[in-house]
Image (cartoon, rainbow, N blue to C red):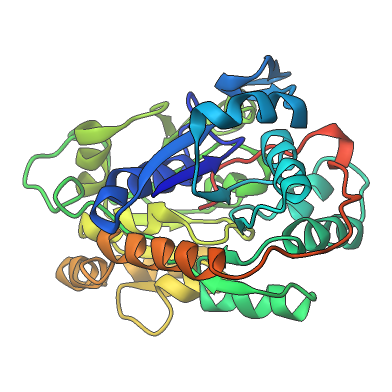
Length: 357
């Protein structure tokens, strides 16, 4: 079997969507699938102004048709609602090919944070986009309940995993010399991540920020005492997690937050708001503190035993994530294709994805 994954989120982006899809491709053979990708690299594209790592693709149904025979998929998954995903959706509907989708990013909230577009309009568009699929994968129970309440149907669970060999407790200190305690944030520096809520906190020690994005220059100028380390990956990132004292996750809009699992696997307790993502990963455990007062939560998290965090992370594996993902693919593609109205057009011409996942 060959699975085609159509996605607007792809390299050089570094985010949860890209990492999740890469892990699924790596695990695919164990579940009987070869995986191929359709991304912005297959179309003419241009960098998003102010955000060059995101490419705006000029994807069309006719170009998808020209590429189709070479890709030769038996199954199709549309990971994002951007131009690549939309063109693939139109092609599949025209050919009567079943497909699945996934909901990674709170696009209505992200768009409303930048433009005067009512969230209800964006959710109506997304409901129609995903409604044509044979199943829409969501990462958490709370997100599933929320979307069902907004009229989404055919929802299927697909959790996430973490590499517990890479992200692990370590004795070396990559942040030696910084005043402690060290409060860490890892993620994209953009308005929807609410990073300012972390940086504005009155906390002892040092705030460390790992990541890049359109808000980095502004945030660094406003908070000169914080340490901005830029994008880090692999062992370098793992060492920073393990060298910190609390992971602070200020986002109110993430659908999961793979960085939460990376922190826990490193033995790093989490402080976050009690919202979708943190509620599902941290809620009901003793691996962190969820509090509407983020400062109080960050200080309380200093008392969480690091071994408790590590034990919680070991519950999440990419193997289990892949089992859910490919199981959903097979079940959904055994159904007949949906016969719904196809007149869905991208909001503003394109929908781009950041680090949801």
